[in-house]
Image (tube, chains in turn red, green):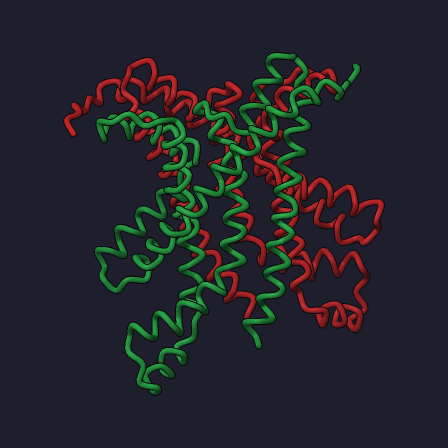
Length: 223
Length: 221
């Protein structure tokens, strides 16, 4: 190939790209906040075994897990304003869609880890005379959180990557700024490669952390 | 606000065509991704540190970046490198294959690693050659154990495939958005498109759980 690399425009546009990265990170953090809290509440709801609660929750979980994140995002962007007559920013819609998507996946992670706690623990709680609330908060919850931590982090990075989709609904995140710069300067190779490396630089350390956390939690639980 | 789903009948043909395109993308990329993923997993379990290093960097990179940027990269940059024109179809398939290969290789690798040492020892005791061992003892078990994960990889590929609409491929997502823009009725159309995706994604996801349960019994037996 004979392509002359020219990094001038990438250097010049770097502040803009970093601004985009901040938006991406902001979206990721908010979506994770929703996903972690709402996901846990949904998991608790699923464990009540009351059909009036579990059926709508199951529908919610399955729907968000079985459709592309892109259609969810586009649906929120176009349909929520019409259906509910509210006018929120594209960024807020992005956070909402990504957060609800993440909550569905996290709920499953929480539920699996809560169910993996041996029933002997419940019996032990009864023997010790702990009530239901004490049992859930002080015995089951800490173990369940610890057990699901690797999956929660993995899902969290997943959302960081999925957040690139918001560029398609005109949120000015890293992906959006990268594409804009690429088309403005006719330098797609330099720009898009830089953008990919920026994404990688954030998600790689976090995904490496998962392996570390996994090893630590499994050791903790064995003791 | 008034919703009317009646006019959708008019567009059912186009939506169906879009769905067929989506399925075409997914099946083609899944088959290519399975082959590429298996090759990568061999590299990831290789004793040569150069091969191991290269495949690891590849897998980590494709797992650590958004599929959208990979798609744009292949669409905009690869033709410049190769010096040839790539159609939108070709670049979508290339991008989805490169991505799914990376996630599929992890499933194969986990399956290969899950085979007990004693199996290798038993092969040595039986006097089997390395080729026979790999082909007739290790491989069948590895593939069997990888099946549930491979299926769920294909399901996620199905969901990721909606991205090809961003480079102008007329898949279900693209068709849906196009109609929504033309008739200014996004609620009905986008909801329908979402339901179509769900109608395929949900049974697939359930099938994964079912196969997983059945296989666990087979592997244990």
